[in-house]
Length: 286
Image (cartoon, rainbow, N blue to C red; front, side, top):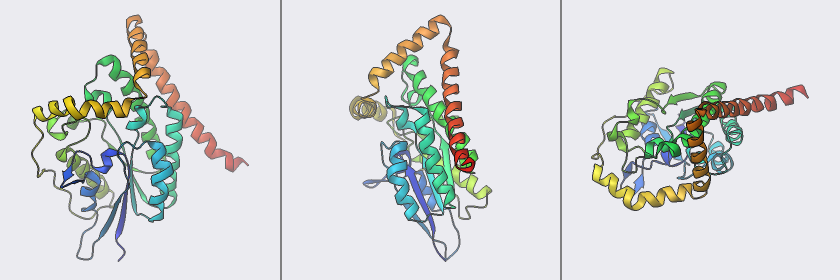
């Protein structure tokens, strides 16, 4: 019997950052792989193509072709947070790239796994004026992921909400990536969705970690040392624009017109999804 082929696409979340095993990262996708099949002849070939810092462009142009060449049975695509941390962020472009990736996976007949993700500003504890623009961007990405997941029949996990976001035990010292317990939580929740759809027959991953939870002092040390550099590397080209967005945010709040910013973001998402629908209808009309 041919092994089940599972391929992970995306950024540091799927790469496994926050869940170290020896000198390497493991992560939720590797934990999930072990529970996809059951029986003496069961076998899973897991290939992790996710790379820390990846954006939707990296997934569409670099990771996707390699994934399709493996003829996978299951493909996870969790990406978009790094797009929100760039001054080039454009929801129309993000939507088009995700549509390309999801569509290619679905066309090949593989099961597609997706998830909406928490916004980085809230996880890092940024001040409100800085966090709100990032949150608005992440909500836009999540809205697109929701819509396209429905369009392509993906197995979708709502990971942008729930008690796990505020449970310190779920997160690594950097406050942005899940720790071992958090990665296990994602694996358990994805397994439950797959099992409910008859797509996972093996045992669910254990939710209990094998390593201790990072201490508060470890988190503070990370922020004081590596954390500042990590944020700087991710946000170098965003900082000037983010400051301008923060000023605009404060100006709207002072005027009581903050709702306009939310409406503007919602309109952009609707326009991006509508543009995809139009582009899909054009070949049929020709």
